[in-house]
View 1 (cartoon, protein in one colour):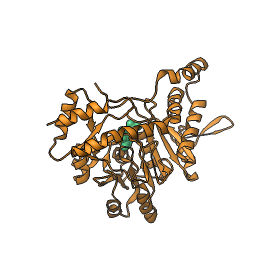
View 2: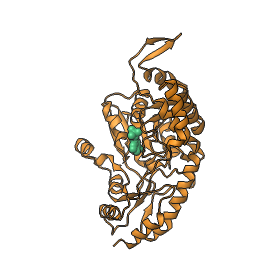
View 3: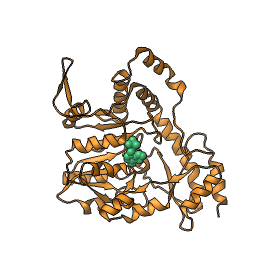
View 4: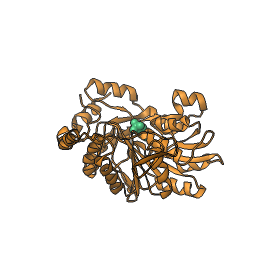
Length: 359
Ligand SMILES: Cc1ncc(COP(=O)(O)O)c(C=O)c1O
């Protein structure tokens, strides 16, 4: 079976540091946590980086950091994984779904602007499948209305727009290190930002609500433990070092698919020249005459694992029942996109051959 994903990390790469950690018995809150945070800052260019257990916990904390409360409206990109809106819902706030471009799959500026109301307290822009295409334009609109912009960059480590890396564009960015992502720590996430005003919040809230004075804990607030263990941070550090090579090799593989697939009537997710795209997921729109689900089954029967692009949040059972406001482009993309395997060593020729024979 040609698998959809293959992690960019081997046991040999982490063996020495893992051994050191086991020998020292120091499994959490140690030097690898600090090193990983430093490396994320350096890589993204952001002033601050905090680790979390996932992008979901990173997003929840970011919404809390900008003081989202029950009844507030948060405008979210509608083509994403449900975690993007679940975190809004979880706080009793209202996710307002903004439709996306059929070409870039990202939030449409006119959709955002038309959905802003006096109750809008934040915007979550999703880098669809890893592409930040259009985020600077969204940022301008957020600045015009003075609304904080949170970037759901779960898929976007390694990407940039106008030479600015994800993690250093929005007010707050959230990353995921789930195994489906380019950089994985098994599970894990990170929050990055530049504004000093968020430091106290994350310092205290991610440390059970405590400030530490002379080694003593003073619990000045309630808080959480979303820490990432030392072992996982070693994995992160190793992959961050080779991330640019990973991104460039995925782009080479993407290009191998593009010409033939376009000639077969597929349309690739468009990424403008100002964007460096990490190709987190290589997603195409299928031609009108092809039933996407049947194509996925056919490829599976031929030993090729593929999947849908991602979800139309407003069209999921839960959100459609509750808000009854399905966004047409996101729904179209959910039903008509396919993700292909894209990593070193994948047999693109074989996959293309099977696609050419599909009737
Ligand atoms: C856009 C987006 N946001 C959030 C998440 C949630 O990430 P995590 O599994 O790290 O919580 C995902 C996961 O796939 C995602 O794709």
